[in-house]
Each structure stands twice: as C-alpha cells, then as structure tokens.
Image (tube, rainbow, N blue to C red; front, side):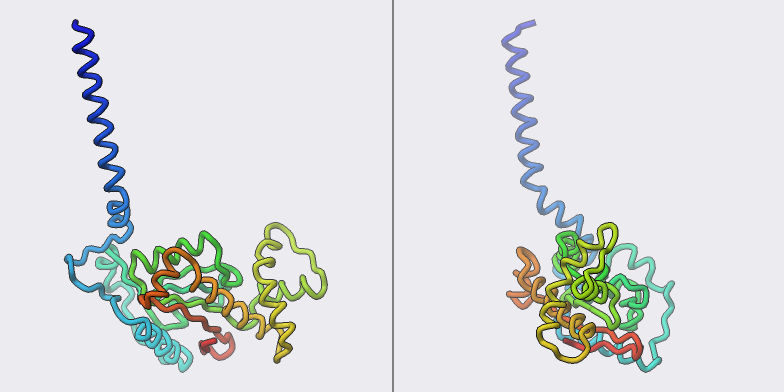
Amino acid sequence: MDKSNNGSREGTQSRRQFLSLATLAALAPSAIGSALAADPSPPGAPRPNAIPPSEALSRLMAGNARYAANTPNERDYSSGRAARAQAQYPIAAVLSCADSRVPPEIIFDLGPGDLFVVRVAGNVVSRDLLASLEYGVEFLGAPLVMVLGHSRCGAIDAAIKVLQRKTALPGHLPELIRTLKPAVVVAEKARRGDLLESAIAENVRRQVAALRNSPPIVKRLYAGRKIDVVGAVYELATGKVVMV
C-alpha cells in the first residue's frame, strides 16, 4: 500500500472530524436552548404564559384571596395531563421556604403547571437555586419571580437564637444560618415590632434585592422589564399573602 496515499486519507479524515466537531460546537447553544425550552408551540405563536408581570401577580393574589376565604376553584387534576406532558407554561417562579405548611400552589389556588417552585429553608438565594430560577424565566417564560417568606419561620428563628444565645447547631445548619444573619441584624437594629416577624420581612427584601441584581439572566430580564421580582410573606394563621 502507498504510505503517502494512506497518510493523505488519514489527514482528510482528521480534517473532516475536526470540521464536524466545530459545527456541533457552534450549534450547541441553540440546540441546548431548544431542548431546555421544550416548547411545542408553533413558531411565532405566543406562549400561554406570555402575560405582563403585573397580570401574573394579580392572578396570584386573586388566587390567594380565594384560598384565604376558603372558596377555592374546583379542579379536575387529571384534566390537561397529556398537554402538560408536552410542555409547561408557569405564570410565576416562586422561591419559597421548605416549611411543610407553605405549599405555593395551594396558597395561590393554582393548579399543576401554573407555578415553577423552588423551595429551601429560609427562602434564601444560592447559586443552585438561582440556576433553577434562571431556567424558569429564560426557558419556561415565567414573567414573574416571587420570594415568599412566611410567619413563624423556623430558619429565621434559629438565626435569632444563634445570634442572641450563641446556640450551636449541628451538621450543615450553620451554613444556612450565616445567610440569614444579615436580615436579623438589620431587623434588630431597626427595633420595630416583633423581631422574628421583622427579620422574616427583611430577609424577603434582601433576597428580592439579590435576585434583581443577579447576572446574567435575572438581572438582564429585570432591567429590561421583561420580568418583575417581588417579595411577599404568607401568614400561617390567616392564609393571607402580604406584599413586602
């Protein structure tokens, strides 16, 4: 066999492989975006959740009013399963506490597919949670982000006890408390009303501010008025959500 000819074929094959890889690399961002979006809507058709942030917030608050009044909408939860298997169109992304008494879909009297929910003790922003919220607004088209705190929050109460009594907590809990301490410090200095409730509201405000300034996605969409980022506190005893 002609070694020079063999070497030429190998060189040609290598160049073809390189060009193929380069083409894949160039297409990767759009391909990834399409896969994440998973939107079967016809090209150019508006998404069902393509609504102003103010309308999304109005729907949430109207639903909460129904829930608090114990007059929720009747729903057939099996209806729409086939459609939801193809895509989701949440009207809001909600960062809420992991507390078992704070289920956002029930609090806002909404159904499956209406909310994109991220839950963690103390409703605090971290890199992983931020990535989830970015997915919700960038690829699912949620026009609203809500940070939802709640009354009698155990995470905030623990942060107060650590600060005031030097309580030692086990495991990874000190890492969580460190993120909550600044809100407690601000509320303590303000000396307005009950320290726990003040710190809960202050923590919500801090997380809202952090999200509004979180690059690249949330900050860009918020600055461009494509989304809104708001904060609220859920009152366990009454069932009402109050904006802060």
